[in-house]
Structure formats: structure tokens, C-alpha cells
Amino acid sequence: MDTIPYQQLPLNGQFSVFEVENFDTELAGLPHRHHDFQILWFTRAKGEHIVDFVTYQMTDNSIFLLRPGQVHQLPKKGFFGFSITFTEKFYFTNKHDRETLYDFTTLFDDSQEYAPIRVSLAAADSFALIIRLMKQELAAQFESSGSSVIKHYLNAFLLLAEREKKHNAANSPDFLNHDARIIQLRRLVEIHFRKEHQAAFYAAHFALTPKRLNEITRDAIGKTVTDMVHDRLVLEAKRQLAFSHRSVKEICYELGFEDPAYFSRFFRHHAAASPQEFRETMFK
Image (cartoon, rainbow, N blue to C red; front, top):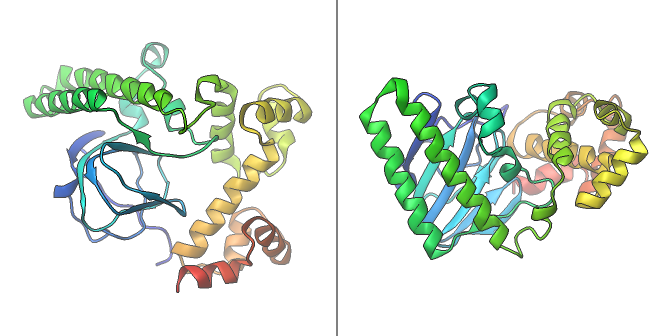
């Protein structure tokens, strides 16, 4: 395999909702990623869910939020629940939507720490009702108004998920204090990390000095801008080493490094193993 495979989901236009136990593809049980945003609500589950090299024990009534491109791996069986998949374009159709709807991207942000959301029994009843309404609207197939109604059901689902996340004190203790600039910065890093490794590039987008932007990120998430860029570079290097047959030199150049030897030292410093050692460990 030369690239990390993208699993094709049963997307109805730009939105879908389906029972996860009834969905089976050739990538079941294998690492893969998606082009779209995905909400996985496990009503009953056991086993391990691996997201970007971190293993989580699956439990009943838990929600995983996956951004486009995140690599994850589920067991082949042993879990029940629902998948909600949607594109950003579906949710934010126009400027009015961006001004009035909840900005779900803050919920999917993992600049502090990624973790599943534990769902209370009361919230589970509400989630189940919303999903039932989504399915009814999809079945009605009223093109002109259906997508707008579903979008607002999705908005309600996301708002409830945010409330549950806030209730998960151990999940993300600083969530209530998130800085919108951190969300914007993470988006910039996601777009430019392959070519732009210096804090000054990102600071310029905020009309700030690198020192001031570093102060903001340290206060918010305990990391500098350089830390954020390095974390993203290491994650992408790990993805390519683990899930593709690209050479270390190819990965080095793709990630904006000019010297493969320097790239190997950089990777070892952050991953405690050379690129080749990491790859061999993953393929054991």
C-alpha cells in the first residue's frame, strides 16, 4: 500500500447516518481514514479503538469525534451504535450558517488532548431521539427543505455532545477556557505544516510576533507554536511510516525537510526511535 486508504462511507449527498454494526467493507478491522467529519456513538462496545497510534478501550455510551484524515482502526466486531458523517460544506452552506450555527470545529479540535466523550444516560436518550428524527427526514427525501432540517438536527446533536464533553471533567479540564485563536492556528498548521515549519509564518497571520503567539499557545495548551508544528510533522511521519511503503527519503522531502539525515535525527528526538526502527516495530 502506497498511501493510507480512505474508507468510502454510505454518504447520502454530504450527510449520512447509519448503524455501525451493519456496515462492513474490505477495510473492516484495518487502519483507514475518511474524507469527511465522523461522529461515532457506541451504544454498546468492547475492544480497542486506535486513533492516530493511541489505543482507547471502547466502552458503552461513548462518542469518538474524527476529523478528515485522522487514521483510526476499529475491531472487526463487538460494537454497536451509530455513525454520523458529514462534510463542512453541508453544515456551513453559506455565510449565514457560519454566523448562526454552532461552530462544530471547536468540538473536533484536539490541540489540547484527544479523548472520547462519555455519554450520560439522559443524553443518550436525547441522542437516540435526534438520530431517529434524522433518519425520518432522510427517508422523506424532501430535497428542498430536508437538508436544512437535518442540518439543524445535527446542530442539536453537536451542541449536546459539547455539553457532555464539558461534563467530562477528566476528559478536557481546560475545554471551557479554549481560545478561538488556537482553533484557527491549528487549522493553519494543518494546511501549511508540510512547507512552513517556523513560528514566524503563523504569527504573521495573526499580526503578532512569534513571542506573543507563543505566550498565547503556552497559556492555552502548554505548547509553543513550534511544538504544535513538530507534533503534526511527527504524526504525519508516523502515519506514512506505518501505513505506506514510501521510503524514509520520500517522506522526508514530502514533509519539507531537505536533509534525510536531519529528518531522521528530528524523528528520533520526538519518537524515541529512528524512522526505520519505528516502521519495523509497526510491521511486527
